[in-house]
Image: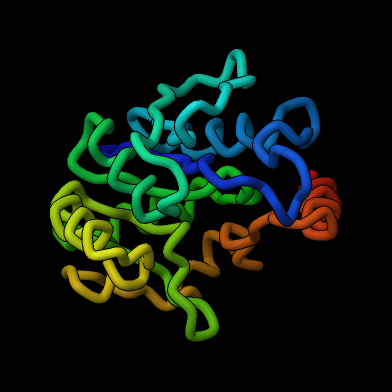
Length: 199
């Protein structure tokens, strides 16, 4: 499929209390699982890390790039990732979303068409960390960052964005688990329970 994938790993994991990407999910790390899932759909996978952060993820089949400046949030990470991809668009997610459904990723890429962004809307909220972005958004994202704006939703509001009702993904992701993020110990335990039920 003519799309890359970007996995953002630049956060401080403050709510989790430890590196989320390194947490185990079965016989792999959370990051390794996310990379494997998106890699089953995308032609290449890029991991975006904060500057000066180590990469203790040996064996994860992805290229690693670093934000040039830390602390600017996911909008800056999106720019860094989009500058590194080999395709004109990418599915972007975070390293703490290990219940992604590859079929849902494929659907969003297909629905994206020539739009700058294709983003699901669930319960009135934009799922900006489970969406497709084209490299055409880089310039606008950089303008926002220079103006002190860090909101990914602010970027989506300023470009050609296709919004997809999350209900339209239920045939490929019945419980919409692709949007489930593990940013606290409680959410991590819930994810492990759901992952076990899948088996």
